Length: 185
Length: 392
Image (cartoon, rainbow over all chains, first blue to last red; front, top):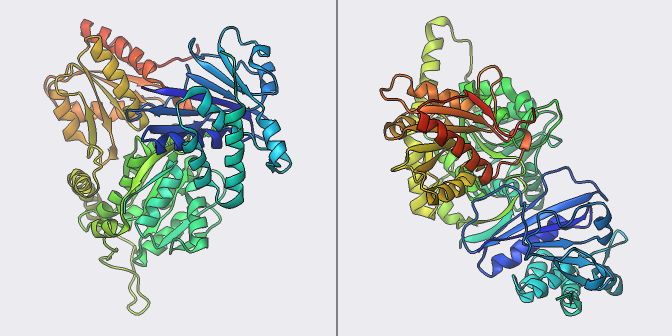
């Protein structure tokens, strides 16, 4: 079964890293994986997209993801400027970093889950160049919202990518996001 | 121990250079350079990779430095892309003419203007006649494996030519996928250290690449052509041997998929060949007898394999992510040339798709195949070149 995930963020927020970590986590569970950025020149602050494919079979396709099963939104205000649900499958799901509850996010019928990843980053002092880091913690929330990967795999992927206290802090954030996820269904 | 690494094709190419125990890397580090040499620079700096890293002021100089290093008898590597490759053009002839087994990954990016950094094979295909062997890869594993295979091939005394290992910008270069990196000892066994037939030696001076008069120039050109023919024979053998060692084979010269009983065969290069497999599976379910063949090696051109494929099929549909202005797609051109003297040639339709990184999905390929199947029914190709999804 092929699952396709599209991650929306702003340049510098680590959407590409999130896509790669998610692939890595699924790979640790024996899945075939692929992660790639939207093929563009990324600029800090500009809306960016990154993609992950997770499959039981070897992945042969390299084209862009048009009909994702899941969307992950790192910056809630992107909803005003980007059509985030474009192509999202009817039975798909949107995971959004926001302080709002799912019922306060109107997505015309799609399932919504929310988590305050920014709040978690501020709480843990998880900042890079003054910006709260949300790309790692949101994956903890993704594990809970979708069951496509286990939280342990996400934590392992994070700790493999960053050793020492950086890895610990990011992993802690992912755990908190897992706990604090609010499902709207 | 076999190690599985998840990374981009660019970084994987760097790891292949390390695994091949490359001794000299010369590169121009600024755009359009890729993260291949960036990763190598990091590994050399940290001592993880033992190589001489020469930073030069242009791609032309990079190739000149590689020529010097390879003529000095050491295993040599560089990487480039688009305009960087174009700037190297003159030196490319010197590398092949000097019979130096330099290996160079090329990340296929469109040439400007209009300024575009996305996938397009025209950069390397327009270097077709430089005497370089050209491989085109369809995934990250193939990038790794082909770099190792290419050193073994190119250092063979029956070949002694340089090779480009091409992969499409972003589609592979920035795409993160798992790759198995074999045990270093086994790689060393498969690819022993380079023992050059000759090298420039200060203790035993001689000149190389001197003037060659009309009485002899043709003979040297003939030997390059002969080396290409030898490469054509060796590539499938080396691919098979690699498969025995490490478990990965990539189809030798042409990777075929469900072609045995196919009436219609899609000919492709690069990742379109991988994407096309999904299109073939879907169309087979609809009853179309279709297969796909990915031309993995463009120089030497696998004429014989193309002719063999043509024997039992009604039609070739050729999808090109490149254009030779004023004619057609390079692969269409070469395929037609390879078949001209054959009896009962199949119909040939040429499509241009995905230039400058435009997305070509399996659905696009299915659409191309369906149009071709219509023409196959009629027994006539209605349009010589079709530009897919062109805004008119």
